Length: 226
Image: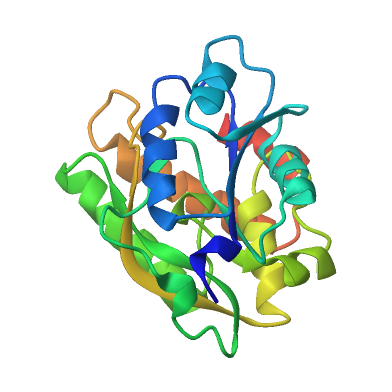
């Protein structure tokens, strides 16, 4: 399977600061196409996407909604969902050329852009969790065969937790492959300006995920996330 079979789908909303670098890193995949799905940005997000040669489309805001819109337009055999503040590995990436026999998709090793000890601890836990439980978060550049994505009806258009929900449904029909290449993720969502905030925010997120897996609706849990 050649890398030309990959469609990279990037949901974005007011990401002009991070998007250009994200797009440049995605080009390292030599993909068939890069689709940026804009959720109504008021900055230069769409223009940056177009200038970089990506397909830029509009959508209602919501990561699940945006990624489903991108997937509906994609022509690749593999859909790779990349957050706009995440960078793909700089080294040559040939992961689809590796055998995917027995796997329906996969995810990458995570590294945060901040090297603080608290971030490193969160990073370690995230990678262990993803590998042991096959439960990656969306910032680990989840990819999936398009036929499988369509079979499970794509992302649920929840206000959040769409990534965990997708991984849980994938696990019921197939296995996700861990790719030991590092994606670099922005630390901005974990840094809240008080000591050890990444650890406390990460623990909150784990508790929210556990509640979700116990059956509590994302529409109720979103109040704990904001």
